[in-house]
Length: 300
Picture 1: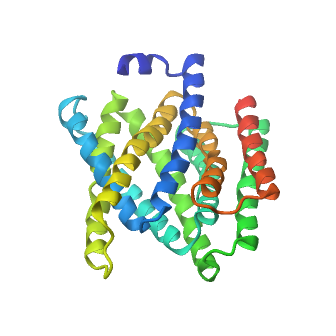
Picture 2 (picture 1 turned 30 degrees about the horizontal axis):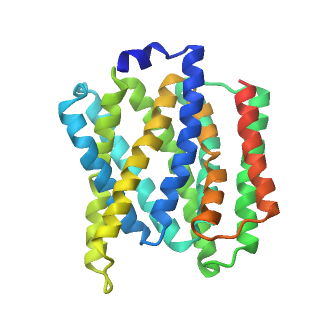
């Protein structure tokens, strides 16, 4: 499968596959965010998810895919640092703010800086029409965040802190998107990067989550938490794996922008699963996000 995937790099078929991978990652990332923000403490949810996908990835990393080249170890170390910082910031943001407030700001900050990073590192360029699409998408995402800030009543006393943390987290989204694209392109076999990334990335948060759980006065039952972690681990494989493969097959900037249609899915999940309010203004803003993604794709 690795040879087939590599053969698609730089081709029209590879471009189409990257498109579908990025859109799949968008939907699955919204599901992933809802799993972390759901009824459990977001720190515990993230720890359970990371433990699950780390354990799932270990046999593939150790016994199935080729082992990484020696020069990959510093790259994996950098990825661990960046992703750990991102997860710490995101968990704290979810602790302070409502899902439909935090998520749009995190995802809205990311694509703009990811496009800039893709230009600086990979020499990728966007057409004027594509930049228009980025602007439309960002207008919808940040418009959604402002709307939530004005009208949403949940956790209003911590909203400024939540929004600040969400903005910083978005910068780390751009950083890990660009860095992971560099990493998956550096190794000969993309599945080597994926397997070892998930195994290594699953090391830190379970330790922090266990310490947090032990210090709680009312400790939640572990079984439902681990069930959520197992589901989240499978979703993480599909979501993060899809967007990483998309950045290997095609432009990093386009994949980053298309993935941010996850904000639309997140709003729908927040409404359907988390019982957060969605009205006609928010639907219109979500339509702007989708329109921006379509413009980026058509302008390429």
